[in-house]
Image 1 (cartoon, rainbow, N blue to C red):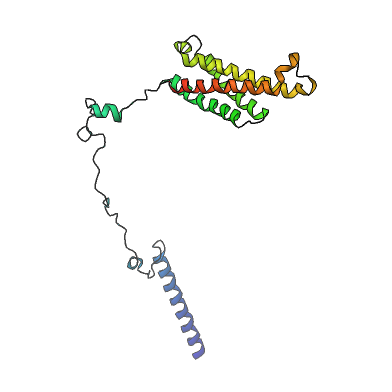
Image 2: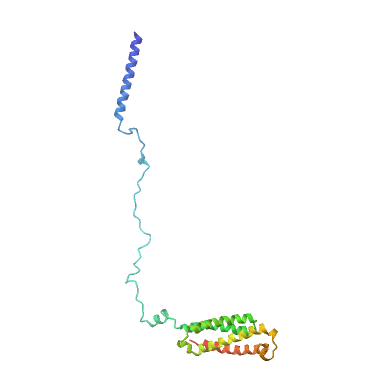
Length: 210
């Protein structure tokens, strides 16, 4: 009899606990997590945007009319020095570039350079003189004494260069008599001396161009 009462009591106790658990579960449904959460705000500090200032002072407007001084165009010193223009004409600049070419040919004669070096320097000179001849054809510069002397001496250089080239090529096969005399070494030396004098005169005239 006691066993029956004890079993009944245990069964009743189990039912009561099960019922209580079910009631608690129903009460928590839909309420989310109800446990204890850690305090996350303890280590979080909001970063408020702070207003920064430049480390330099604000510059003035460069284009401000009050800050730019007018150009002293009525000042002769400014016009003659600051705004000085190149008064050298294009023709003068061209002549100044030709002069060193004549000087190199002259130096070649004085140093008695071989035919190849002499001819190459004359060829370079002639090409530049031809360019200037075409450039100033029909213009007032073509009437200048300097221009006419330049073209004349350039042709003389070309003829002597041709003579030296032919002499080196044909002299072994020609007698230095009759037509072959022009390739004679003495004749060539004379022609080089004539050319040297003309180049010196040409350089002097070209250096007077301004």
